[in-house]
Image (cartoon, rainbow, N blue to C red; front, side, top):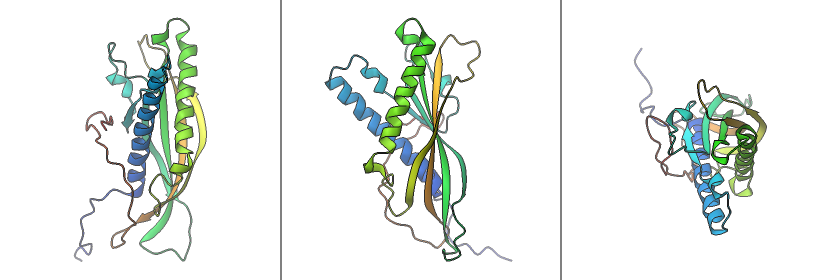
Length: 209
């Protein structure tokens, strides 16, 4: 039997598009929050000066003492599953539900004493910004209308990352974002999308803009 698929399978699946789109949205919107905070002369404007990564479960490996990169956000895919078993759906067009993990890292070491407490407060502040951005009416469909059919933050949870032999006090607040969308298979043409163009550093997954 010979191969029957006549096109290259080099296009990303919807979940990959969604992951990069969410990271790009957070990168742009947090940069805008930082700009507004500076204009307002907010004394803690740097709380919004965020470094964003994609699929980097160890972003702290790239933290340098003279350039701590905090706060950090890492966007990754946790899981994907069929959203429905609708028998009327096209053979080449199915509905899926994916879960993204959005990890918000903060440290309190830059603020003097009680570093752990301050890291926790700042991590929740960053998570608050992420939640507000993603739940904005402007991002109901993550600018992927016709492909994404909905999304919601279903859980937020704080934890301390494993950092052996480190003097840094770091706290992470993780948001779980559930996204429902359509997934096309070969021969299906998808809708026109408002994909945000970003550059992702190959080694670290850091967004460059």
